[in-house]
Structures are given as C-alpha cells and as structure tokens.
Amino acid sequence: MPLTARYAGSLVDRLLKVSMEKILVTGAAGFIGSNLCGALLAKGHAVCAVDNLSQSTTRNIEKHFGCSGFEFVQEDVRNEPAILRLAEGATVLVHLAAYKIPRYGNALDTLTINVHGTESVLKAAREHKSRVVFASTSDVYGKNPHLPFAETHDLYLGETNVKRWAYAVSKIMDEHYAFAYQQEYGVSVTALRFFGGYGPGQNTTWWGGPQSVFIDAALKDQPMEIHGDGLQTRSFTYISDHVDGILRTMFSPKAVGEIFNLGNVHEISILDLALLVWRLGGRGEPKVKLISYQAFGKYEDVRNRVPEISKARELLGFEPKVGLEEGLRKTIEWQRSVTNLGEGHS
Image (cartoon, rainbow, N blue to C red; front, side, top):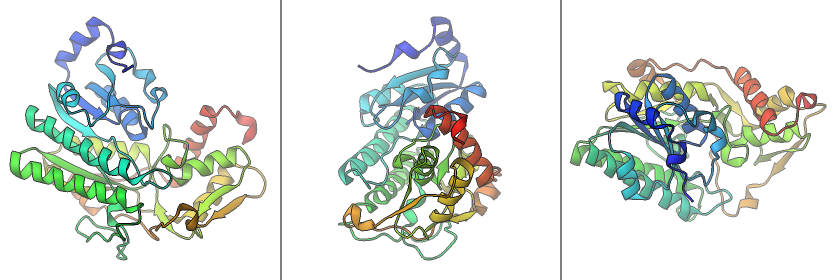
C-alpha cells in the first residue's frame, strides 16, 4: 500500500510548507535523491519526495520523516496523473528516478521506465510551469574514443541487440524529449550527465556500481568480482560533489537549456579501484575474481570514461572537492555500519 500522508508531518508542518519553496524529487529514496533531499531541507525548501521503492529503501530518508516541509509519497513516476498532482506548486522538478544498465535485468524495464517516466515529469512541468533538472548519464558517450568526454562530443553506441546499450539509448531519448519540450512548450530544462557517483546511501549491490560490491566483498573477506580484465577505467564522484552540482544547477539561469557533465576528473582502472578498496576495508592479501563478459550473454563494456568539466566550472562554479581515497574511507565506514559487520572487521 502506498506510503503517503503517513510521512507528511503534522498539520502545522504542512501549513508551514506554504511559505517554503517546494521542490519535487523523483527517485528520492535512492542514492542521489536521498542525499539531495537532505541538502534541500537544510536550505529551507519544502520537499515532495517520490519513489516507488523498487530499487531503494526508506532507510535512506527515514530521518526526514516528520520534518517540517518533508513529504514522502510511494508512487511510480510513470503514473502521470499522480505526478501531475504531486508537482502542483513545485518550482523545480528534479527527476532522478531511473533504471540502470540491464546487466542482470531486462532492457524493456530500462527503456520504458526511463522514457515514460521522464515524459511524465515533463508533462507535469508543462502544466505547472515548473523547471526540470533531470539525471542523464555518462553512459551516453558510449564507445567514443576521444577523452575526456565533453558535452559537445558525438555519442557512440553499439549494436541494438546488445542490451547494455538500452540504458544509454533511454537517456539519450530523455534528453531529446526534454529539449523538445523546451522548444515546443517553453519548459525550462537542464540535463546532468553524472559520472560514477558513490558514498553513503549508495545501493550495496551492482546497482550501486563496482565500488559497492567491492566494499561488500572486502568487509566480508570474500573475492571481489571484476568484470572483464579490470583494465577499463572510470572516474568516481563523491556524493556531496554531485549534490553540490545539482544545487548549483537548480537555481542558475545560466543552466537552462544546457547539458552538464558532473564528475571527478580523476581516472582509475577498475582493478586498481578494487585493490584500493581492499587496502582500505579488507584484511590480508586482496582477493580478486575475474568474470568474463560472456557470463552476461552478448555484452559490451566501455573501456574508458572520464569527464571534461570546464563547462560546469565556468557556468556553475562546480568543482569536485572530495578525493577518491577520502571518499572511499567515508563510504566504507557507512557501508560497514549498514551491514552490521562492526569495526572488528576492518
């Protein structure tokens, strides 16, 4: 049964929301969404947090239950009438709800949830004259060999019968939808291409990224599973830096109609990431297990991914502040606490 007014706070709290600027956040119980909700509340905004809890948990946002200006509604972002109703009075709709790369899942969910969900949010923004800031992904750059990736670069994707590209395709479609709504209906939109977010609140399975499962394995003294040869490289961005980028985007007139890369420019191989995680959170010699891509059927990976962020620097003043080792230490500490392993396992 949907969780709605149960977490809307007291009557006094709900009346106080009238004087606050309302922000609607989809995917609010997820990793980025839950951290963003906390930051928005700290700045005095009223937050309508929406999530269907299919890939997240209320554990990430339960500390806000009963807070003045916070309301949580369990709802699917594809439910257009519900989103239209919840968005009423919101000045900004931050759309973070999405399905990721279908490595273990199916491409149909990724395509339908991402595209239909974004269209639902855009329709609500058109009706209520709200601004939309939405999550795209660094995955849209695909196999582009030119590094670092800039927002003006072409997007190189693989064959349509390789399901891993469904995520990138869905987000490219989201971007096209958003800019079409801006052109046709005057909806103010901004697309954010996130690079490798991690930190407290992250999903501790593969859904959360390689660092999540590496930390879990290191804490449990189990082999870290690395897909492919581990020499593929990525950049990883601590959650506070991603949230800072979103906040800078939400209220900046310079961000309207723009696409921004939000990420850390430090590049590291997946193998080196695993070894670093083990050094910080494991014990003894690191345990590594290579998993062939053939285990996932017809699958392709991206060899290198690192952002060019000069546009975000110049227009938003965005600058990542948390280094990888510092961020991983904080993340390992958090993940240890939620998996109940205790300090004796460090």
